[in-house]
Image (cartoon, rainbow, N blue to C red; front, side, top):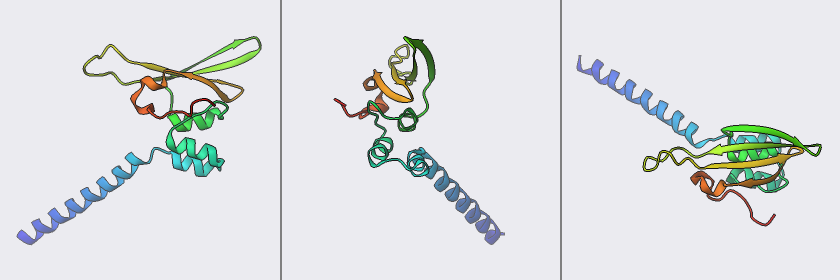
Amino acid sequence: MRSSTLLLLLLVSAGALGACGTTAGGLFDDGRESYVQENELSGRDSVHVTEGRIYRGMPIDHALAALGPPAGQDTTTADGKTRVEYMYRSRPNAFDPGNVPRAYVYAEDQAVVDWTGLDKIPRFDAYYEGGM
């Protein structure tokens, strides 16, 4: 009986380790690298996407790949130009649950034209190259 119990324990342990390895790989693969490879990005865009940064003039699809999916979006049209506003939201803070900072990325003609508040969301600490 002991050898069968030991064998069962070893099999369960090996299965658990295999599952952890698969899960850990999924946690660290946020899709940025595969997006770069699948879309054959330029050197500049591939660096920005993999580092999670954006710049003015960047194609909006690349910016969304860099920052991740937005929490919401809104489209407005003024003076014949369509502007899409992508909203990002911070997670609630346990110390101040009512304070949920928001950030916005604006796009016109499928390119980033501006953003506000990205520095208020912790995961976007190094979000862009200034002065571009």
